[in-house]
Image (cartoon, rainbow, N blue to C red):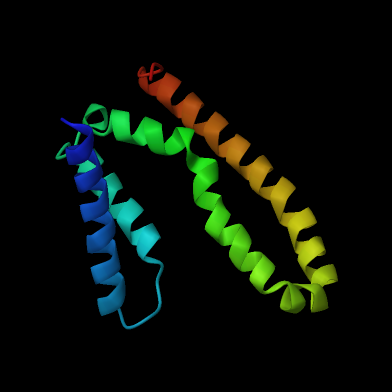
Length: 122
């Protein structure tokens, strides 16, 4: 599959996520919906991982570039953040190690379950 076709699939899934998010009666992130949709497509083998490999690798290699708009937005609201700096720092210091810890244990549990099942290879 060409890179353009791969990107078209990824953007189509994102567009469907945006559409579903707009229809929901509660606010829900379209990006999360798009990831769930893509997970379902991959699990149902409608889309195979190798079909999106090239574009996925490119996007992962250049991920830092996608953080620039978010960082600029944070700078735009620095006055609001400065007024709440202590609570923000405490939240960051507590949640960051917690997320690392829980992610590490989730990965270890997944590896153990895969080894038990006999599918230990990726």
